Image (cartoon, rainbow, N blue to C red; front, top):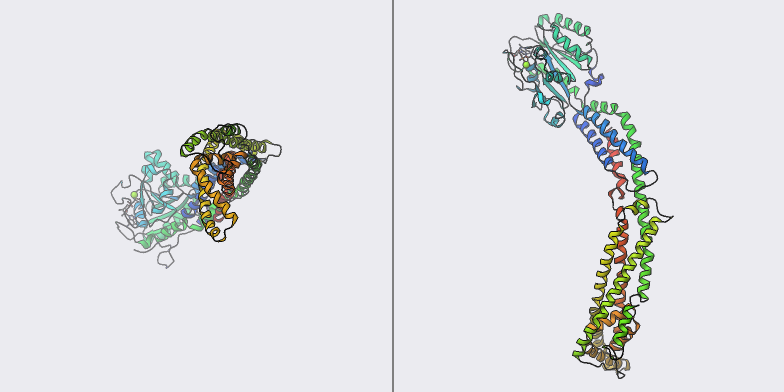
Length: 591
Ligand SMILES: Nc1nc2c(ncn2[C@@H]2O[C@H](COP(=O)(O)OP(=O)(O)O)[C@@H](O)[C@H]2O)c(=O)[nH]1
Ligand SMILES: [Mg+2]
């Protein structure tokens, strides 16, 4: 079987007759699915990110940015994305023509397989068949006529094109089924198949004219032309095309070579195949999309940039507020530590309890005799331990109160910064979202926990001080033995008294005394020195005092954190503005 011929007996390459280039018709140049999809995806991504962008802080200029964001989401979602989706849909090429013209045979031959029933027995094509490339499945899914067709996939259909073997025109028009009409109206291109015998039929021309009026492109396949009559028939057909305003349409000629069943020779349909491939040409379709949407994309850039700038303002403001909050709590934290160092915990109930415990005849009275001996037995130690329990309770209560007060002053300072005349931009939004009640509830619990932890360190700290002194002491006594030094003898006496105190007073009670000393009861520190020696007593008291001061940040920090919680927003994160800018860059690269 010979290829498509333009002139019988010439070796002219099989080219369609063109009066006008198909590519000039924007309707004829449809999207390349890959590029179109990525462009569509890029715009969808942008829309999603723009929609997700919030402006948590009220700044000057935030309100216009919020409105602009809403309008941009609308513009993208209601206009650009539908338009892009439309442009990205594959071109629907409907194969139309009179019954028996060879439509189904042409479709089958183009895809190299019998996807649509063909034959002499009528009717053959009862339900339209839509053929597309497997990779276009997702885009094809958006086509409006899917419920009315059988869908077949073929690798031989160029991407970006779907072929629809429609029911015979005559039967479509007779049945006047809405579905069939919708099908034909959805077509972007008509590949009109006619024969030397049928091209004069009036009905197909009426249908074609209506398609041209709707803006569809037309190409003609003149099928089964006896070589002898080709010049006449071809001339006639071109005349008719001109008469119906279709002079620009390509014309393919398939010569008749006698009775035929099954697929046509691939060479015969190659020009039609090339035309289809050309139709789906990748770069051109991308250019068409870009050209069609150039105005929209150009408007998008400054718009998105503006939003990204507004997000940047939010991020900058958040950083400013965070710094202001840091500064706000620094002074109350330092003041709280200074007052703890000055003995705030000891004032009031603690000092009164100490006085009661050390009054003449009370459990801690006369612990140190003039001789330096520590009076008492292990039984006395147990009695003293239970007697000092109320002292530890009092210390815990006073410590909790002091720490809670530090938290309260931190809250006041935070409020002053967020409310004050020099409040940083956006502070009002943070202030509104700040859950002060929750902070207060937590504060009491936190302060009590910290106080309990601190008082539980008394005994442990004394034990640690004693054990480090005894290991240092045994090292020192070795040296003293050799030199007979007086200070070493003193150390020996101190160490002996320490051991006595440990046994007779008990580490529990020593811990309570050390806590009282660290809290600021100077008499307690003095007693501890008398019992344990200056070095060990001072070490224990200093350790406990440092421990107490170190708990201030644990109560002030959460105050700041609660106030700053509204800043923990992903749109206030440092990289927030770059998200939108990145989307814009991707889009720029695609258009
Ligand atoms: N000789 C010849 N027969 C053809 C050609 N195209 C189709 N036919 C035959 O014409 C008959 C009708 O073809 P079919 O594809 O079913 O036409 P449709 O009704 O337009 O789909 C079938 O028997 C085909 O084998 C062709 O190019 N040459
Ligand atoms: Mg058919």
